[in-house]
Length: 168
Image (cartoon, rainbow, N blue to C red):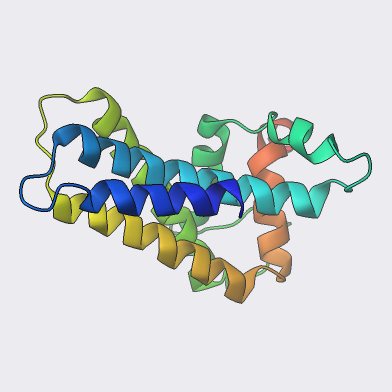
């Protein structure tokens, strides 16, 4: 199994762990883990597309170059009203790609609240909902992963901050 699959399974387990009165720690970790599942899924897809498998450790090393903030910025662009990247993506942008990007942004915010906003009381339904959104985003990806816009999206997760500075 892959890391993102294991993380998603773990998020589901944590969300359902205590049947009567779920612990806040379990719900918080479930939400955070659902986010990390989607993050690592997108890294997996991007490194498979952008980096050869030889030498064997190249993809693993390349995955360390991705950052959460860059991924969020790209997802905000793709989820936005105009969506996509001028002169690189074609219109109309696939609805699934917009939804995946929007889910990433929402999960990023939810993870931040779950990890740092200890004043907020979380409900099991929230955790289960985020796990479900992650599952749906991964399923939607498979419908569009071979599109040119998906390729631009994956490349942008890594290099958008660098290529964008020359197009201002």
